[in-house]
Amino acid sequence: MTRAAASAASSVAARALASVFGAALLLGGCSSMERAFGGGSASSPVSSKPPSLGFMSSTARPDFNQDVSSQFNPDAPEDPLVYLREAAEEATRARQPLAAATHWSSITRAQPENMEATYQLGRHLRLLGRNEEAERALRAGLRAAPRDPRFAQELGKTLAADGRPEEAVTVLEQALAQGQDGPDLRSALGAAYDYAGRHAEARPHHDRAVALAPHDAAVLNNAGLSQAMGGDLPGAEKTLRAALGAPEADARVRQNLALVLSLQGDSAGAERLLRRDLARADADRTLAFYRSLVDQPDAWGAIRRSN
Image (cartoon, rainbow, N blue to C red; front, side, top):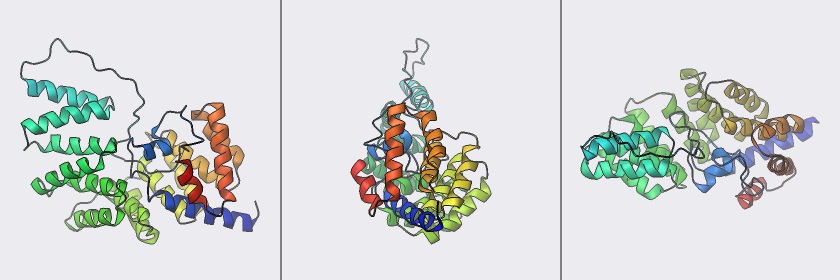
């Protein structure tokens, strides 16, 4: 690839990925937009929903395609709240967001002071793409437990998912100013800045997150996407390769790396990664889509139309 072509690809990558953040769900979930960047089935129609473009959550990396059935437990306790708690925890472990949200909602109605249930309800509503309901639950939790960092982090993700990245930045910056810190918060804040198109401000938060959790696949994935959005494709490739070697790396990391490789002209490398997770026809369509981005004057328009 010539230097001019590499520069053009880098510019296209920045535009394409930067624009994705305006609509894609922040840090993982199962809305239609999240399925577009890897939360959906490997056999989904990737020609209409390319599966790469998005952040991950280092506290919740859901794969909502696992067919785990809840079974009646004949030894369930007599106390219905105890049973509900067990059912909610099982649904959470099984990555069944609808069942989990239903059970956690029942618990919050019976025990509105239960902050764990409130948090889990808000988180699973976000994962379901029910952002307005998630925001109400998380704001209630934040008022009741302002020092619990989970509420600010989830609220920030929800606001970004709802197309309000500047509000997400405000919430997460306030949490940071209150002394809350950690790789999850930093990665979420960096991603929120990226959603808002403020990539220079995102960079130090991603760097801090990586320093705090250098082997966390989600933290590295988010940092790599931020680099790609800023036009640093070689740096993004290096970071995403590190993410791929980290524990809990999944298909989303491979597909993000495939996009970066494709935008640098390495179609063969991108193809190898895509074929690990996608059926042949889906991989072919996705690879063709990635290749088309290099020559697109409006790469985001192409991504948006495909979604």
